[in-house]
Length: 286
Image 1: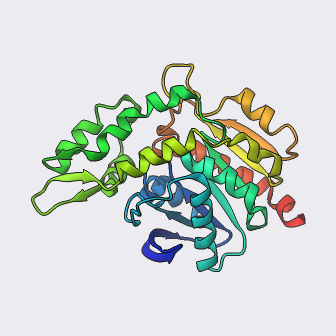
Image 2: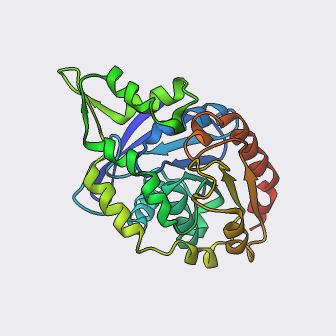
Image 3: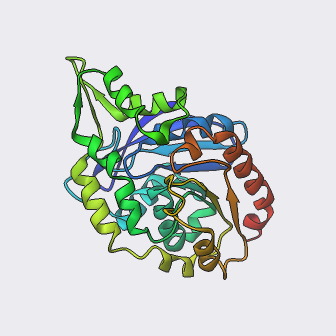
């Protein structure tokens, strides 16, 4: 695994190259996450694919410019990453916000993708979701005396009830470790607020009219734990992809919006590999 900084669109973007050979999969994280969210998945894919993940602007070790926190700008940033790395065509995998960006990218630059994988996201966002993610946003400007105190606070979140080394590594990468031992999230809260405001003005569903590549939705049935709040429902997904010839809906058993990657990675990776294998001929015929 290698960490890299590349300059695109006037900012330094942090990139993690997990290694591997074969087709390249670029992984895009969710609203307040970072590239290390993908550790568990990447480890299990590099036997057959090259896996890359980036920190979106305003997150992780990427720059935090004053503006540019919207779906369109992220789409352009990812295009510049592909150009910088001289990647003509890739597989795109995105979680949550990353899935929304993926829908935009697939519609805007279809020639740069062979397949699209959406992890619990990819449709207009239900207003109830914004309330559910409030705790993740509130943590962003909090200072904790040390990393242990930070972890103890994160463990109180019921969505992280299946704690493991991947969850801990993700949170380690999430924070700035200061000289006095204290820690604070690297994510720019102002950026997230702008992101949410812009997201409320963006119609993700409209992008589906322009998508023509094989697309997989991996769904968390316990998304936000209340049985009624989802990033996308099966009914919505079927409606959006009714004109898409190769779209697939797969439930990741007992997963919530966060555990679908952090602890339910075995089934997720199996489904990803199956989808990529089954659609390989299709993408090379187009």
